[in-house]
Length: 216
Ligand SMILES: C[S@@+](CC[C@H](N)C(=O)[O-])C[C@H]1O[C@@H](n2cnc3c(N)ncnc32)[C@H](O)[C@@H]1O
Image 1: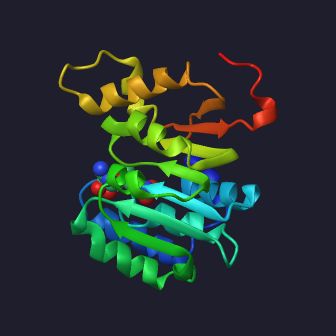
Image 2: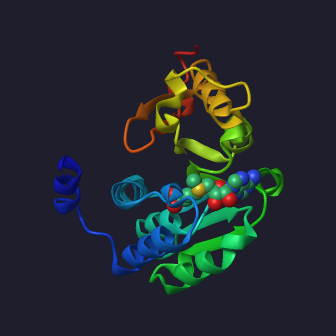
């Protein structure tokens, strides 16, 4: 009930995002992977609040969150989004192309870590939402590419509550997220917290040079 109230009193999704959500819910495996209405509005607003011009997303899925973040970019802003799964390429490309923000979205098919190994750009915002086993590797590969004062967001860091349950020895995704959440508690030069929205989103702000006095 409260969820409906929140949705009724938040800015609606565009017609395109509603159609994309319907298509995913009807015909695709793992519809829960899509960011969804409220998280999408949050991502869009973070981009515009930061005045971000350069955004990177690891894990596109069908393009929902990329389209939301593109909404928050200025006309000359750009989001690069990468996904390893070429089976979702057609649907992602089709919806990105239909978005009025298509010109701001670069969609790549490939492995996020391989891309990061060759990427020499600087980003205002990075949204980590790919393979949960590799969050520490993504973070380490991306940290030097985030500008001072920039933001890294990591999705699904509460993983349906599994982070506080007994973990099976073969549950590598939960293990990856637990390791990442612990890793941040000793990582230098950041401010961070978990926003308990949806499946948990960790906000990480890279400190600026003058702020780096409270080393852990
Ligand atoms: C949770 S979904 C992304 C959801 C999307 N960001 C959204 O919010 O609408 C995770 C995606 O990460 C992709 N992925 C998994 N491993 C990857 C890798 N090594 N490199 C790039 N993408 C990967 C999966 O194919 C999947 O589509």
